[in-house]
Length: 181
Length: 181
DNA sequence: TTGACAAATGAACGTTGTTCATTATACTTA
DNA sequence: TAAGTATAATGAACAACGTTCATTTGTCAA
Image 1 (cartoon, each protein chain N blue to C red):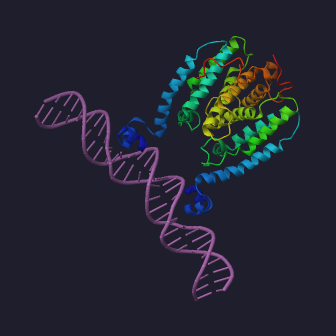
Image 2 (cartoon, chains in turn cyan, purple, green, blue):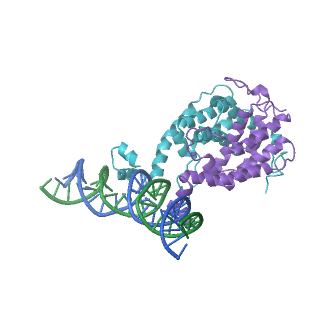
Image 3 (spheres, rainbow over the protein chains, first blue to last red):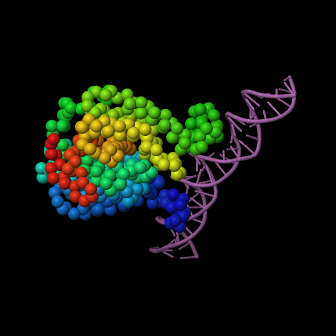
Protein backbone atom coordinates (compact mmCIF):
# COMPACT_ATOMS: atom_id res chain seq x y z
CA UNK A 1 0.00 0.00 0.00
CA UNK A 2 2.81 2.38 0.84
CA UNK A 3 4.59 1.68 -2.39
CA UNK A 4 1.41 2.04 -4.38
CA UNK A 5 0.78 5.38 -2.71
CA UNK A 6 4.31 6.45 -3.53
CA UNK A 7 3.83 5.42 -7.15
CA UNK A 8 0.59 7.38 -7.24
CA UNK A 9 2.33 10.31 -5.54
CA UNK A 10 -0.15 10.45 -2.76
CA UNK A 11 -0.05 9.54 0.90
CA UNK A 12 -0.89 6.06 2.15
CA UNK A 13 -3.94 7.38 3.93
CA UNK A 14 -5.45 8.67 0.72
CA UNK A 15 -5.90 5.13 -0.59
CA UNK A 16 -8.25 4.44 2.27
CA UNK A 17 -10.56 7.17 1.11
CA UNK A 18 -11.32 5.09 -1.94
CA UNK A 19 -10.92 1.52 -0.69
CA UNK A 20 -11.89 0.09 2.67
CA UNK A 21 -8.73 -2.02 2.83
CA UNK A 22 -6.09 -3.73 0.77
CA UNK A 23 -8.38 -6.61 -0.10
CA UNK A 24 -10.98 -4.36 -1.59
CA UNK A 25 -8.41 -2.51 -3.65
CA UNK A 26 -6.91 -5.72 -4.96
CA UNK A 27 -10.32 -7.03 -5.78
CA UNK A 28 -11.14 -3.90 -7.75
CA UNK A 29 -7.97 -4.22 -9.79
CA UNK A 30 -8.61 -7.88 -10.47
CA UNK A 31 -12.21 -7.16 -11.36
CA UNK A 32 -11.04 -4.86 -14.10
CA UNK A 33 -8.70 -7.44 -15.49
CA UNK A 34 -11.36 -10.12 -15.42
CA UNK A 35 -13.75 -8.02 -17.38
CA UNK A 36 -11.18 -8.46 -20.10
CA UNK A 37 -11.08 -12.21 -19.63
CA UNK A 38 -14.82 -12.24 -20.07
CA UNK A 39 -14.52 -10.21 -23.24
CA UNK A 40 -11.79 -12.52 -24.47
CA UNK A 41 -13.90 -15.60 -23.79
CA UNK A 42 -16.94 -14.11 -25.46
CA UNK A 43 -14.87 -13.01 -28.43
CA UNK A 44 -13.68 -16.55 -29.12
CA UNK A 45 -14.83 -17.20 -32.67
CA UNK A 46 -17.52 -19.83 -32.90
CA UNK A 47 -15.81 -21.98 -35.51
CA UNK A 48 -16.42 -25.69 -35.65
CA UNK A 49 -18.71 -27.62 -33.39
CA UNK A 50 -19.50 -26.57 -29.82
CA UNK A 51 -16.83 -28.87 -28.44
CA UNK A 52 -14.15 -27.25 -30.49
CA UNK A 53 -15.55 -23.92 -29.36
CA UNK A 54 -15.42 -25.00 -25.75
CA UNK A 55 -11.84 -26.18 -26.10
CA UNK A 56 -10.77 -22.85 -27.49
CA UNK A 57 -12.38 -21.12 -24.56
CA UNK A 58 -10.65 -23.40 -22.11
CA UNK A 59 -7.33 -22.60 -23.69
CA UNK A 60 -8.10 -18.89 -23.60
CA UNK A 61 -8.85 -19.21 -19.91
CA UNK A 62 -5.57 -20.91 -19.13
CA UNK A 63 -3.56 -18.52 -21.23
CA UNK A 64 -5.22 -15.59 -19.58
CA UNK A 65 -4.15 -16.93 -16.22
CA UNK A 66 -0.60 -17.38 -17.38
CA UNK A 67 -0.55 -13.90 -18.85
CA UNK A 68 -1.88 -12.36 -15.64
CA UNK A 69 -0.51 -14.57 -12.88
CA UNK A 70 -0.93 -12.06 -10.09
CA UNK A 71 -4.46 -11.21 -11.05
CA UNK A 72 -5.26 -14.85 -11.36
CA UNK A 73 -3.92 -15.59 -7.92
CA UNK A 74 -5.93 -12.78 -6.41
CA UNK A 75 -9.06 -14.11 -8.03
CA UNK A 76 -8.81 -17.83 -7.33
CA UNK A 77 -5.91 -18.63 -5.06
CA UNK A 78 -5.64 -16.07 -2.29
CA UNK A 79 -8.33 -16.07 0.36
CA UNK A 80 -11.24 -14.16 -1.10
CA UNK A 81 -12.57 -11.01 0.50
CA UNK A 82 -14.56 -12.02 3.53
CA UNK A 83 -18.02 -11.73 2.04
CA UNK A 84 -19.50 -12.15 5.44
CA UNK A 85 -22.88 -13.69 4.87
CA UNK A 86 -24.04 -12.84 1.38
CA UNK A 87 -24.05 -15.84 -0.93
CA UNK A 88 -21.05 -16.50 -3.13
CA UNK A 89 -21.54 -15.12 -6.61
CA UNK A 90 -19.81 -17.36 -9.17
CA UNK A 91 -17.56 -15.41 -11.45
CA UNK A 92 -19.17 -14.48 -14.80
CA UNK A 93 -16.26 -16.17 -16.53
CA UNK A 94 -17.38 -19.37 -14.87
CA UNK A 95 -20.87 -18.91 -16.25
CA UNK A 96 -19.31 -18.63 -19.67
CA UNK A 97 -17.91 -22.11 -19.18
CA UNK A 98 -21.31 -23.45 -18.19
CA UNK A 99 -22.76 -21.92 -21.34
CA UNK A 100 -20.15 -23.64 -23.45
CA UNK A 101 -21.00 -26.96 -21.89
CA UNK A 102 -24.71 -26.42 -22.35
CA UNK A 103 -24.16 -25.81 -26.03
CA UNK A 104 -22.35 -29.12 -26.30
CA UNK A 105 -25.16 -30.99 -24.62
CA UNK A 106 -27.85 -29.29 -26.66
CA UNK A 107 -26.14 -30.17 -29.90
CA UNK A 108 -25.87 -33.76 -28.80
CA UNK A 109 -22.08 -33.82 -28.62
CA UNK A 110 -22.16 -34.46 -24.92
CA UNK A 111 -24.42 -36.92 -23.17
CA UNK A 112 -26.99 -35.60 -20.74
CA UNK A 113 -24.60 -34.60 -18.02
CA UNK A 114 -25.28 -32.76 -14.83
CA UNK A 115 -24.17 -29.33 -15.98
CA UNK A 116 -23.39 -28.11 -12.51
CA UNK A 117 -21.16 -31.04 -11.67
CA UNK A 118 -19.50 -31.18 -15.05
CA UNK A 119 -18.70 -27.49 -15.15
CA UNK A 120 -17.12 -27.72 -11.73
CA UNK A 121 -15.04 -30.67 -12.85
CA UNK A 122 -13.83 -28.92 -15.96
CA UNK A 123 -13.12 -25.73 -14.10
CA UNK A 124 -11.10 -27.66 -11.54
CA UNK A 125 -8.99 -29.21 -14.27
CA UNK A 126 -8.10 -26.00 -16.07
CA UNK A 127 -7.63 -24.17 -12.81
CA UNK A 128 -5.30 -26.87 -11.58
CA UNK A 129 -2.99 -26.57 -14.52
CA UNK A 130 -3.09 -22.79 -14.50
CA UNK A 131 -2.42 -22.57 -10.79
CA UNK A 132 0.41 -25.09 -10.84
CA UNK A 133 2.13 -23.51 -13.81
CA UNK A 134 2.00 -20.19 -12.01
CA UNK A 135 2.95 -21.41 -8.54
CA UNK A 136 5.63 -23.92 -9.59
CA UNK A 137 7.40 -22.52 -12.63
CA UNK A 138 10.54 -24.42 -11.64
CA UNK A 139 8.85 -27.80 -11.90
CA UNK A 140 10.18 -29.84 -14.86
CA UNK A 141 7.06 -29.37 -16.96
CA UNK A 142 6.84 -30.89 -20.39
CA UNK A 143 6.36 -28.47 -23.27
CA UNK A 144 3.72 -26.10 -22.05
CA UNK A 145 1.61 -25.88 -25.19
CA UNK A 146 1.52 -29.62 -25.45
CA UNK A 147 0.60 -29.98 -21.81
CA UNK A 148 -2.29 -27.57 -22.13
CA UNK A 149 -3.59 -29.38 -25.19
CA UNK A 150 -3.35 -32.72 -23.45
CA UNK A 151 -5.18 -31.49 -20.41
CA UNK A 152 -7.99 -29.96 -22.41
CA UNK A 153 -8.26 -33.08 -24.50
CA UNK A 154 -8.31 -35.23 -21.40
CA UNK A 155 -11.00 -33.16 -19.75
CA UNK A 156 -13.27 -32.97 -22.77
CA UNK A 157 -12.94 -36.63 -23.60
CA UNK A 158 -13.45 -37.45 -19.95
CA UNK A 159 -16.71 -35.57 -19.60
CA UNK A 160 -17.96 -37.02 -22.87
CA UNK A 161 -17.81 -40.54 -21.52
CA UNK A 162 -20.98 -42.59 -21.97
CA UNK A 163 -23.61 -42.31 -19.28
CA UNK A 164 -22.99 -45.91 -18.27
CA UNK A 165 -19.93 -44.84 -16.34
CA UNK A 166 -21.91 -42.36 -14.29
CA UNK A 167 -23.23 -43.51 -10.99
CA UNK A 168 -26.36 -42.26 -9.37
CA UNK A 169 -25.45 -43.28 -5.91
CA UNK A 170 -25.02 -46.70 -7.41
CA UNK A 171 -21.92 -48.43 -8.58
CA UNK A 172 -19.84 -46.96 -11.34
CA UNK A 173 -17.38 -49.75 -11.16
CA UNK A 174 -14.63 -48.09 -9.21
CA UNK A 175 -13.42 -46.43 -6.10
CA UNK A 176 -15.96 -47.67 -3.63
CA UNK A 177 -13.59 -49.87 -1.75
CA UNK A 178 -10.61 -48.19 -0.26
CA UNK A 179 -11.05 -44.49 0.10
CA UNK A 180 -14.46 -44.28 1.60
CA UNK A 181 -14.70 -43.66 5.29
CA UNK B 1 6.56 -16.79 14.64
CA UNK B 2 5.96 -14.88 17.85
CA UNK B 3 2.86 -16.86 18.63
CA UNK B 4 4.62 -20.09 17.87
CA UNK B 5 7.45 -19.10 20.19
CA UNK B 6 4.95 -18.27 22.90
CA UNK B 7 3.28 -21.63 22.46
CA UNK B 8 6.66 -23.28 22.68
CA UNK B 9 7.49 -21.15 25.72
CA UNK B 10 10.65 -19.83 24.19
CA UNK B 11 11.66 -16.49 22.78
CA UNK B 12 11.13 -15.58 19.14
CA UNK B 13 14.86 -15.48 18.57
CA UNK B 14 15.27 -19.09 19.60
CA UNK B 15 13.33 -20.26 16.56
CA UNK B 16 16.01 -18.77 14.37
CA UNK B 17 18.62 -21.02 15.90
CA UNK B 18 16.87 -23.98 14.30
CA UNK B 19 15.36 -22.49 11.15
CA UNK B 20 16.85 -19.89 8.86
CA UNK B 21 13.49 -18.18 8.41
CA UNK B 22 9.76 -18.70 8.47
CA UNK B 23 9.76 -20.38 5.08
CA UNK B 24 12.19 -23.03 6.15
CA UNK B 25 10.23 -23.75 9.30
CA UNK B 26 7.00 -24.03 7.41
CA UNK B 27 8.61 -26.29 4.90
CA UNK B 28 9.92 -28.57 7.63
CA UNK B 29 6.47 -28.87 9.15
CA UNK B 30 4.89 -29.60 5.81
CA UNK B 31 7.59 -32.11 4.99
CA UNK B 32 6.62 -34.09 8.03
CA UNK B 33 3.00 -34.10 7.12
CA UNK B 34 3.77 -35.15 3.58
CA UNK B 35 5.72 -38.11 4.72
CA UNK B 36 2.38 -39.28 5.99
CA UNK B 37 0.71 -38.63 2.66
CA UNK B 38 3.34 -40.79 1.08
CA UNK B 39 2.71 -43.53 3.59
CA UNK B 40 -1.01 -43.21 3.01
CA UNK B 41 -0.61 -43.47 -0.74
CA UNK B 42 1.70 -46.45 -0.45
CA UNK B 43 -0.64 -48.13 1.99
CA UNK B 44 -3.54 -48.01 -0.45
CA UNK B 45 -4.54 -51.64 -0.83
CA UNK B 46 -3.87 -52.99 -4.29
CA UNK B 47 -7.34 -54.35 -4.91
CA UNK B 48 -8.71 -54.65 -8.39
CA UNK B 49 -6.99 -53.62 -11.57
CA UNK B 50 -4.30 -50.93 -11.68
CA UNK B 51 -6.80 -48.32 -12.79
CA UNK B 52 -8.97 -48.92 -9.78
CA UNK B 53 -5.82 -48.76 -7.71
CA UNK B 54 -4.84 -45.47 -9.28
CA UNK B 55 -8.26 -44.02 -8.68
CA UNK B 56 -8.11 -44.88 -5.02
CA UNK B 57 -4.77 -43.17 -4.77
CA UNK B 58 -6.09 -40.08 -6.48
CA UNK B 59 -8.92 -39.91 -4.01
CA UNK B 60 -6.53 -40.38 -1.13
CA UNK B 61 -4.47 -37.49 -2.44
CA UNK B 62 -7.44 -35.16 -2.64
CA UNK B 63 -8.75 -36.16 0.74
CA UNK B 64 -5.37 -35.64 2.26
CA UNK B 65 -5.34 -32.11 0.91
CA UNK B 66 -8.79 -31.43 2.31
CA UNK B 67 -7.81 -32.86 5.65
CA UNK B 68 -4.64 -30.75 5.82
CA UNK B 69 -5.52 -27.58 3.95
CA UNK B 70 -2.79 -25.44 5.44
CA UNK B 71 -0.10 -28.00 4.82
CA UNK B 72 -1.37 -28.49 1.32
CA UNK B 73 -1.25 -24.79 0.60
CA UNK B 74 2.29 -24.56 1.89
CA UNK B 75 3.33 -27.40 -0.35
CA UNK B 76 1.68 -26.49 -3.62
CA UNK B 77 0.08 -23.09 -3.49
CA UNK B 78 2.30 -20.67 -1.65
CA UNK B 79 5.50 -19.58 -3.32
CA UNK B 80 8.01 -22.34 -2.65
CA UNK B 81 11.18 -21.70 -0.75
CA UNK B 82 13.56 -19.94 -3.08
CA UNK B 83 15.71 -22.89 -4.03
CA UNK B 84 18.12 -20.61 -5.71
CA UNK B 85 19.69 -22.65 -8.45
CA UNK B 86 19.46 -26.33 -7.54
CA UNK B 87 17.04 -28.19 -9.77
CA UNK B 88 13.47 -28.70 -8.65
CA UNK B 89 12.99 -32.05 -7.00
CA UNK B 90 9.49 -33.37 -7.71
CA UNK B 91 7.69 -34.40 -4.58
CA UNK B 92 7.89 -38.13 -3.81
CA UNK B 93 4.11 -38.20 -3.69
CA UNK B 94 4.15 -37.14 -7.30
CA UNK B 95 6.42 -40.03 -8.16
CA UNK B 96 3.85 -42.29 -6.56
CA UNK B 97 1.35 -41.04 -9.11
CA UNK B 98 3.74 -41.73 -11.96
CA UNK B 99 4.17 -45.26 -10.68
CA UNK B 100 0.44 -45.78 -10.61
CA UNK B 101 0.18 -44.66 -14.21
CA UNK B 102 3.06 -46.86 -15.27
CA UNK B 103 1.30 -49.88 -13.79
CA UNK B 104 -1.78 -49.07 -15.84
CA UNK B 105 0.21 -48.85 -19.04
CA UNK B 106 2.17 -52.01 -18.35
CA UNK B 107 -0.98 -53.99 -17.75
CA UNK B 108 -2.41 -52.70 -20.99
CA UNK B 109 -5.25 -50.74 -19.41
CA UNK B 110 -3.87 -47.47 -20.70
CA UNK B 111 -2.56 -46.92 -24.21
CA UNK B 112 1.10 -46.08 -24.67
CA UNK B 113 0.96 -42.62 -23.25
CA UNK B 114 3.76 -40.23 -22.53
CA UNK B 115 4.06 -40.89 -18.82
CA UNK B 116 5.58 -37.52 -18.07
CA UNK B 117 2.86 -35.59 -19.84
CA UNK B 118 0.05 -37.75 -18.56
CA UNK B 119 1.15 -37.62 -14.96
CA UNK B 120 1.35 -33.86 -15.12
CA UNK B 121 -2.13 -33.71 -16.58
CA UNK B 122 -3.58 -35.95 -13.91
CA UNK B 123 -1.78 -34.13 -11.15
CA UNK B 124 -3.12 -30.82 -12.47
CA UNK B 125 -6.67 -32.14 -12.35
CA UNK B 126 -6.60 -33.44 -8.82
CA UNK B 127 -4.65 -30.45 -7.62
CA UNK B 128 -7.16 -28.12 -9.21
CA UNK B 129 -10.07 -29.61 -7.36
CA UNK B 130 -8.19 -29.82 -4.09
CA UNK B 131 -6.95 -26.26 -4.31
CA UNK B 132 -10.32 -24.84 -5.26
CA UNK B 133 -12.21 -26.68 -2.55
CA UNK B 134 -9.72 -25.33 -0.05
CA UNK B 135 -9.51 -21.79 -1.36
CA UNK B 136 -13.20 -21.32 -2.18
CA UNK B 137 -15.21 -23.19 0.42
CA UNK B 138 -18.08 -20.73 -0.08
CA UNK B 139 -18.51 -21.60 -3.73
CA UNK B 140 -21.80 -23.46 -4.37
CA UNK B 141 -20.13 -26.82 -4.92
CA UNK B 142 -22.19 -29.86 -5.68
CA UNK B 143 -21.96 -32.72 -3.23
CA UNK B 144 -18.27 -33.04 -2.52
CA UNK B 145 -17.94 -36.81 -2.67
CA UNK B 146 -19.79 -36.90 -5.93
CA UNK B 147 -17.65 -34.12 -7.36
CA UNK B 148 -14.43 -35.91 -6.45
CA UNK B 149 -15.66 -39.13 -8.02
CA UNK B 150 -16.67 -37.33 -11.19
CA UNK B 151 -13.34 -35.58 -11.51
CA UNK B 152 -11.37 -38.77 -11.01
CA UNK B 153 -13.59 -40.59 -13.46
CA UNK B 154 -13.20 -37.78 -15.97
CA UNK B 155 -9.44 -37.72 -15.65
CA UNK B 156 -8.95 -41.46 -15.91
CA UNK B 157 -11.34 -41.87 -18.81
CA UNK B 158 -9.73 -38.88 -20.47
CA UNK B 159 -6.21 -40.21 -20.32
CA UNK B 160 -7.41 -43.62 -21.49
CA UNK B 161 -8.63 -42.21 -24.79
CA UNK B 162 -7.41 -44.05 -27.88
CA UNK B 163 -4.11 -42.94 -29.33
CA UNK B 164 -5.94 -41.64 -32.39
CA UNK B 165 -6.97 -38.56 -30.47
CA UNK B 166 -3.39 -37.70 -29.71
CA UNK B 167 -1.77 -35.50 -32.26
CA UNK B 168 1.09 -33.13 -32.47
CA UNK B 169 0.28 -29.50 -32.73
CA UNK B 170 -2.78 -28.20 -34.47
CA UNK B 171 -5.93 -30.15 -34.99
CA UNK B 172 -7.24 -32.50 -32.40
CA UNK B 173 -9.75 -34.83 -33.92
CA UNK B 174 -12.39 -34.87 -31.29
CA UNK B 175 -14.80 -36.18 -33.86
CA UNK B 176 -16.72 -38.41 -31.51
CA UNK B 177 -15.19 -37.60 -28.23
CA UNK B 178 -17.42 -40.02 -26.43
CA UNK B 179 -16.46 -42.94 -28.59
CA UNK B 180 -16.84 -46.03 -26.52
CA UNK B 181 -14.40 -48.80 -26.31
C1' DT C 1 -13.29 37.86 3.59
C1' DT C 2 -15.63 34.44 5.53
C1' DG C 3 -17.72 30.01 6.34
C1' DA C 4 -18.55 25.34 5.17
C1' DC C 5 -17.63 21.16 3.11
C1' DA C 6 -14.65 17.74 1.03
C1' DA C 7 -10.12 15.98 0.02
C1' DA C 8 -5.66 14.85 1.35
C1' DT C 9 -2.15 14.39 4.62
C1' DG C 10 1.45 12.10 7.43
C1' DA C 11 2.54 11.03 12.06
C1' DA C 12 1.44 7.29 14.91
C1' DC C 13 -0.19 2.52 16.19
C1' DG C 14 -0.06 -2.36 16.37
C1' DT C 15 1.65 -6.38 14.23
C1' DT C 16 4.80 -8.72 11.36
C1' DG C 17 9.51 -11.39 10.53
C1' DT C 18 14.12 -10.97 11.76
C1' DT C 19 18.71 -9.67 13.97
C1' DC C 20 22.30 -9.48 17.43
C1' DA C 21 24.73 -7.97 21.54
C1' DT C 22 24.11 -9.88 25.84
C1' DT C 23 23.23 -13.36 29.28
C1' DA C 24 22.51 -18.02 30.96
C1' DT C 25 23.53 -22.88 30.82
C1' DA C 26 26.25 -27.13 30.45
C1' DC C 27 30.49 -29.35 30.24
C1' DT C 28 35.55 -29.90 30.46
C1' DT C 29 39.80 -29.34 32.69
C1' DA C 30 43.10 -28.03 36.52
C1' DT D 1 35.62 -26.36 43.84
C1' DA D 2 37.06 -22.94 40.55
C1' DA D 3 38.05 -21.35 36.11
C1' DG D 4 37.44 -21.60 31.32
C1' DT D 5 34.97 -22.53 27.15
C1' DA D 6 31.65 -23.77 23.84
C1' DT D 7 26.83 -23.78 23.17
C1' DA D 8 22.03 -22.30 23.86
C1' DA D 9 18.71 -18.91 24.75
C1' DT D 10 17.22 -14.37 25.36
C1' DG D 11 14.53 -10.12 24.47
C1' DA D 12 15.18 -5.43 23.17
C1' DA D 13 15.46 -3.22 18.85
C1' DC D 14 14.67 -2.73 13.78
C1' DA D 15 12.41 -2.27 9.45
C1' DA D 16 8.39 -2.96 6.87
C1' DC D 17 3.63 -3.67 6.75
C1' DG D 18 -1.58 -2.37 6.75
C1' DT D 19 -4.34 0.87 8.88
C1' DT D 20 -6.28 4.99 11.53
C1' DC D 21 -7.39 9.75 12.56
C1' DA D 22 -6.65 14.46 14.22
C1' DT D 23 -5.09 17.96 11.44
C1' DT D 24 -4.21 20.61 7.36
C1' DT D 25 -5.14 21.95 2.69
C1' DG D 26 -8.03 23.06 -1.14
C1' DT D 27 -12.44 24.72 -3.28
C1' DC D 28 -16.26 27.49 -3.98
C1' DA D 29 -20.62 29.98 -2.72
C1' DA D 30 -22.31 33.68 0.01
